[in-house]
Length: 264
Length: 235
Image (spheres, helix red, strand yellow):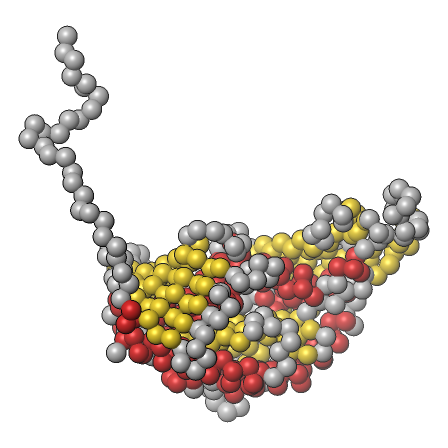
């Protein structure tokens, strides 16, 4: 569904007002209502289901396997699947590359180690069921809440198996919560002179540029990217737009994080 | 019985064998070589109009002080007609290819392509070219790293790619609103236009970034140097 030229111009004009007038009445710092449910997949170690208003939906499942880390060094596998897009489309490949690179940087692989030989290997599968706007923010929220609610089997055998060959044995029903900090990614749309957080589909269509900023361990950090939210309205932006976006993140990201942590 | 080989198409009776001209040493014109005067270390070599069947092309060699070398060639095809539904603006597509060694994985390559497409969507005057497509191909000919232990980094080649596409677009005569160029500091690249007043792309992978204004300021200095080099070549 596209917008006509008149609709776009109307929307652009209202978004560039001061304060901006967004279609759903949000303030420039306000997110769409997010509905998060966790731990609903019985076969996964952790799972989450995120629904944004407007029908965007995303499911993340975290599964785990015990591997010998002296043989297999890669302990994190991320897979992103977006409905309606081919697996080799630029959107899917660049998003899955961005997210897997980011998770490899941020998740401490030492925390996955069970013994001196064996580790948990995490498989993070992301399935975007429906999304019109740029889905990266929603995906990162879903990964964040899935990882916060991931339970791993409790090890009862000894954790030093260098001398004695021993396979790890687990407790029958006790689980340990995975201690992992996942980053949150925020998208901003720059429309004229306004910087808007979490742009909806219509807002992305008229935006002049987009920004992607990461929030990790209480600060705005890399990757910081400019992303095209559309193909025909792209313009440059100035430094103060970027600074404004970072200021908004510093102000509101802790609240978002708190809300997501308390969702379980 | 005929002894003629029927499986071959023989040339006409009066055909003469091909004779090739003696291969003379081709020398690169030195005037295209501009050195960075400030540091005396970095050097850029620019040449344009190499690919004959492209509308515009450019070849850039970038060398920094530590013998890091990036050789990039870009070619621009278009504006050429697009079939299908009417589009009031040109659609820009950018393909990145590593010609010799493959350092990067496909995901990363797609990431640079989407990033560069976004940068050049903002710079090319796409309203001027309705119903047309502009296809840009970047060939990374060589990327040598002085420190082999270091992981291959996209950031190192990104500014050269941006400069090279700009030169190819200029060579093709496609309307752009300004010469876009980029500056990089550590693990961040910022692409600017309008003398650094406007940012058209930012790509930062630096975890240690604390002050974004400082980073942009540092990149802007590099951008101005790069842009100066491009302007000098075009003059």
